[in-house]
Amino acid sequence: MSTDASKKDDCVELKPSIQHLESSGCETQEERDSLPAPACASDFFPDGGYRAWLNVVAGWLTLFASIGFTNGLSVFQSYYSLTILSAYSPSDIAWIGSIQFWGCFFFGLWAGRLSDKYGPRIPLGIGTCFLVLGIMTASVSTKFYQLILSQGLCIGLGSGLVFPPAVAIQSQWFLKKRGFVVGLVMSGQNLGGVVWPIVVNQLIEYDGISLGWSLRIIGFLQLFLMVIATLLVQARFHDIPQEPLPLKAFATNVHTVLFTLSTVIFFLGIFVPYFFVSSYGMKWGASTGEALYLSSILNAAAFFGCYAWGIAADAWMGHFDTLTLAAFCAAITTFGWIGVRTYTGTVAWSVAYGFMSGGVQALFSPCLSYLAPSPALIATWNGIFLTILSLPVLGTGPIAGRLLSNTQDDNYLPMQLFTGIVAIVGSFLFLATRFAVSRNGGI
Image (cartoon, rainbow, N blue to C red):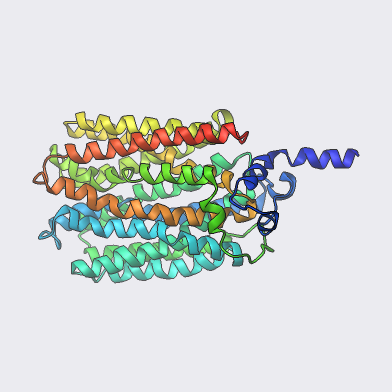
């Protein structure tokens, strides 16, 4: 009796996953049994140890090298508009970054499935090849369509294959520290968004190196970092059943659908400042060099935001409450962008928005992992979610660029209003999701 009671107590931490299995969309017991069943928390989540922390290092390096480079797109948006793509509108140029961002999310379904079936090293290895190939071909591109294919599609494909496994694998190793750990891993993309623009700016503006060689240098650095990450990463589960993709379970899980809708709407605007903060700074008197650093400032603030919001989620507020608060704070800060009229003000606003938006970027994966019907399906659940999330991400840059182009590239108000409105609507939907999960006894 005492042994059974002890095992029951160990399973308390996984109660939410069991409850969500009941509403996962599997109408019959046979369908439910086809999903990998949760086990005791003590069996699944070591919440530390040498191997677990090596996975954190691998995840951080992966996001630094891949999504971190994508987060610095504001540099290329401004640089291309002044040089080789000066004949194109901001909306046209924004397609390069939007396709790259889209790829980071769209290929998540296949990356998550590969990771669940064969371990994370397979998608990381394949993704590394596409990532490096994309940046090397971008280094010799001089036409718009060439940059779309290389810097947009190829780098996006590579990033999309490495991003979901690098983040989702952390939820196989950590439970009580999940918010902090995922926030720590996600901070890699923000520090990358700080470092890569500075590297590009330093190489081009001060060292006189061409854009082509600047990109090649970055490509070799990315290859080195990704090889280390691929060697370090390791799955916790090795015998995951080869079941069909659980699309029906995902699509009929009410909480998952509501959370996905919330994130889709919020992400229509979350990356707009990452695209246009540099050009906005130039409008208010910043030099080209100063404007390029705005992207680094924004990502530096998001870097600290990932840590702070993740710690708050684990220690005090819980993942859903913290995500909702961060979303509302980011939405309010977005509306504050309208009143910024100086370069100094743009710097201060970038710090505030970066910190708030960093919380949303850090916490959506822990919340979604919580809704997965089984810990063994966390990577697949994240992959399906990220593929859906790719749709608003694809439209973010072009929509914002079109709103800007329609006002002679000078009036940012329509773009700022669009960003703020979708953020506040998404925040209220996050709040609705939080109450829906709470009523079900999940949190």
